[in-house]
Image (tube, rainbow, N blue to C red; front, side, top):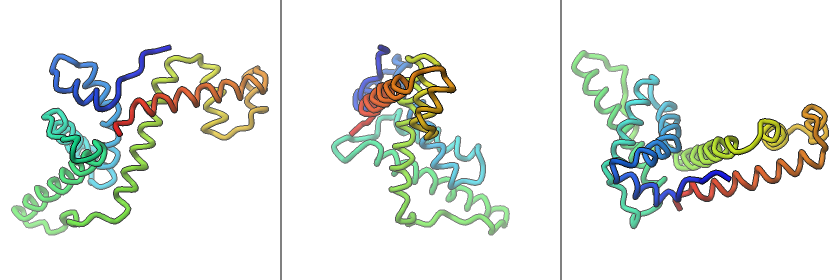
Length: 191
């Protein structure tokens, strides 16, 4: 079985070591898409979301997170929202300089559902990353059996026929891979 990444707290500690490029790559692969996707829903262009993502990841690299003050992913949400607000503040100033009043600042208060949206996106990203890691350790046929039954919702009988497997084997593979994904998700969680 492949060696899974350490816990997120361990990963955050490892980020302080500038020589540990594996830690940074793992961190960016897990949290980069989360921050980018969240920012992209709120910003006018892909490039703007990429800039916000870079700023948020930079804050993480500077090590400003204090675990005594709460969960990391909540801190990451706060930093992301602040960077989005800063983006609109900068844009607002630029618009005033050129006389463009079409750009508006992000409201100081985010909608009540923003934390729930972040939490859902965080859970989805954890699943996606765990699935990537597990997929690299199983055969293509087993992955297809899992994916088609667990994610696409196809009947085991149909998948078995398509893949040339027994129905029992399809469900066994699905169960095993799902357990592996759950294990990796637990390891990826910072809380």
